[in-house]
Image (cartoon, rainbow, N blue to C red; front, side, top):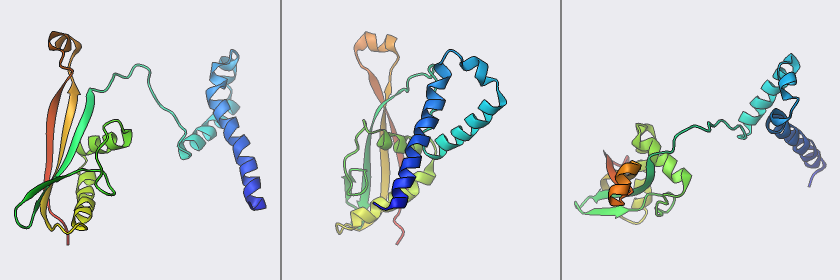
Length: 178
């Protein structure tokens, strides 16, 4: 390892620890209310918050946020080839792997698509078409199908033990750009 790299790491780690301790431990100490009012503290804190945001370590959450009503998702790509035959494919790129509704990245991507961000869906479907066409299938059009599992109200669950209902969403048709 180069000397410059070692020095950079030797500086980065203590600075990072200082920022984390400053922003997480300091607010729970008994003397915090008295230093919180100081101008110097606020200036340092502002700088540290910029650092946290730029390194992806900032946390903004609310204890009283309600639980999501999305219980899970089932996602499939339905494609019609040049001969008019329909096929279904798994949606996860690369390789058209199966969707895992426990994987937060998978779920959040398809939630963005479902709730109005076609800017995600159109380029995604073009990549899906390229992946499908690698296997020799000529795609005419395709649909992205997302079936959301929505959690029912507790009073309804206790009546019949059915936890969720399915809300189907179909996006498309999308045509491959050649």
